Structures are given as C-alpha cells and as structure tokens.
Amino acid sequence: MSHKKVRFEYYQVVFRKNYDDENVRDRLFDLLVWMDQANRKSLEGRTFDYRQEQARLETTYWDPELGFYFLHFVRLRETNIPSTARATAQVEPLELEDDEFIGEEVSALYDETNHVLMLQRNKFSLGPEGIEEYLNLIWDTEEDKIHLRPICPPNVFELARRSTEYRKINFRFADLSNINPDQTRNRFRSPIGNVFSSFERYRGINAQVTITVGNTKNSLDEQTVNDKLTDIEENAELFSRAEIARRADDDTRVELIDLFAHKAHDFGTFRMERRETLAHEAIAEQMWKIYSANEDCRNRQRDINEYLRS
Image (tube, rainbow, N blue to C red; front, side, top):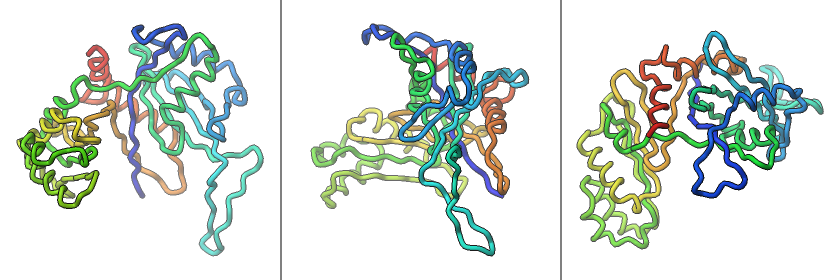
C-alpha cells in the first residue's frame, strides 16, 4: 500500500469586460451561472480541443452533505499511452479504440460566498491556465473574459516568521556576473554572506543552496532563519527563487512557502489501493475536510477570506 500527496491551490473567479482598462478592478464572476450553462450541454457538447488533445467537464453539482459545489474536469489524453504487462507474458502496448482516451482528472471545490475555487493540481491534467481557458470556451462571449486570480497571503515574509519549526530553506541567486561580492557580502545579516562570497572562486553565474534538517525532527535555528528571511526581503533583486518549509504550529502540517510567488495552498494525503485510481469523490471529501470551518482547526475558509480582505 502506498500514499499519494496532492496539492490544492486557491483562486478567486473574476471577469473583465473587453473595454476595461488596467485601472478597472476585476469583477467577481458567478460560477453558478456558468455551471448551469455547462450542465445544459451533453458530454460531447462540453468537450473542446486542448493542446492537440481534448478536455471536458465531467460533472458539476451541489453536495448537500458537504455543503459546497464541486466540479470534476478531465483531460482526454491520446498520446504517450502506457503499456500493459502480465506476470507470465511480455509487455504489450495498450491499444485504445477510436473513442477511448486516457482520462487525466482534476477536481475543484467552489465556495460561492467568496467566489473561491479550491483546485486540485495534477501535472498530467488541466492546470489553472487550462481550467481558465475551458471556462471561457463554455462561456463563449466576446464581451467578458473569465480569470482565475491566485489568492496569496498579504505578507508572505511575516507568515514565514510566524512559525514554530523550520525544516528547509532553499534559495537561488540571480545573475552573479553583475554583482560585486565584496560590496554585497556586507549587506547580509545571516551566514549566507560568507557562502555568497565563496561562489566568486567558481566564476559561475548562478548558484542554488538548500539547507535542510533531513529526516530528523529537529528545526533549523530560528534566529538564523529569521536573519535569512530579512536578507531575502531586503535584497530581493539578488535572488531569483526562495522557498522555506515550515510548520505554523505543532498541530499543523509542514508547509512549503514560495517567498516570491506564494499562492495559498494545502496538501492532502491519500492512501492508494492496488489497481485502483484516486476517485473524485475521495478528493472532494478531502477538500471539504481541509477547507470547511467545521472540520479543520486551521479554518482555511476563514484564512482565505482574510487574505481576500487584505
């Protein structure tokens, strides 16, 4: 028996008129109207070409027990098809009929009170850009364009500092060829200044550093990590990437925060039975447990609302 870790991200569903200029704020989009329009179409009617393949909405519905709307999308893949094998026979290509595909699924929870879409990430299926494109294909109007705007914490560095445990920090320097190491080293509070200056001897252009506690239950030194966070925040132009794995408190999971492009997100872990796929219903229930104020002590629904108000 194995386990699968699934990432969920949060987006607000908005739209813009074709005549809106950049000073006009996004307008909130009522996805329930879109769902009603999509449900009037047959499976074939809501299947569209997507990057040399096809994509469609399998179903969308209100779950009275969980108290949220759910959507189930699928990418119909017909390239890079796997093979099958038997214990007593050689491997054979998996042959699909003309109307058969490999279904790559993705699920979403929709909270109509704040127009929030909690979206499962599956690298083989539709990503947020693909879902956004699909929403507009169903909507099919030249006047409006639907957008999925990532929901982000208002101050990611303060969020990172409010942690009880630091498991890993990973950062990548920007182009080092245009930086004077002697002048730059003095700008750092953390020990990374010494590491930074040593890169000059390699005459490299880019460098990436990962510091971790490994498989132990220890934490990186809190003061040193906080100094490093200050270094990155005050010298952002020197870094092209920065991530930190931290635990907000003793009762929460370890969370990976992207300090430059941090989207509000969570992870769910699923037990995978042999010869079974990860069902949409199982994902929907896990999303509810993470997001619902009734189940999760973190109350992600409340957190997301606070992020939106900020």
